[in-house]
Amino acid sequence: MKKSIDFFKNSDYISQQMELLIAYARKKSSPFSAVVINPLIERSAFAVNTTSKDGPIHHAEMNALESYYQKYGKEDAADLILLSTAEPCPMCMAAIMWSKIPLVAYGVDISFLSKVMPQILISAQEVAKAMDRKTILAGGIKEEECQSLFRK
Image 1 (cartoon, rainbow, N blue to C red):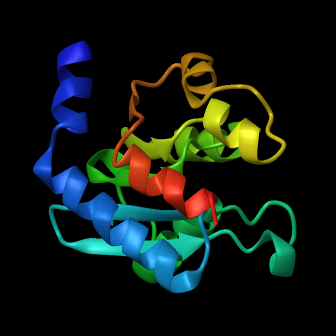
Image 2: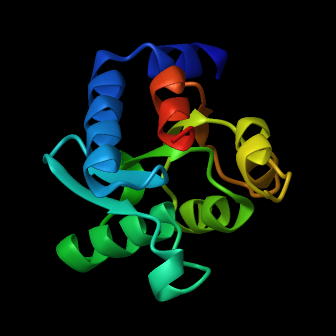
């Protein structure tokens, strides 16, 4: 598993996609941004946090999942990747796990976020361990660039 995480964290593809996500976050003026990607057939759905407009469950990851499935319908999630500027909260990580997305990468972790705003201090890894699914999680992807989104 460690080898998979190292590959994932050092992947040029993941790095490029995170750069696109960070640019999207800046364009939308939202530090919380996420994208669901199917790299094999070049499909993606970007989203931002819309909790102030749509209610408390509309986190970027939830919106990206919803947008992806609305655009492309339900498909086998085995080839999907979810990238987020921030570590998924317990609610979002549970939704990701139920969606069976096997690869999740994020920029900043919960401990960083908790210094900026209130957080439920349960890591995405803890949520993933509680479910019988193999999910690769990699944090710290473009971490400094993601931190800058939250320091405005």
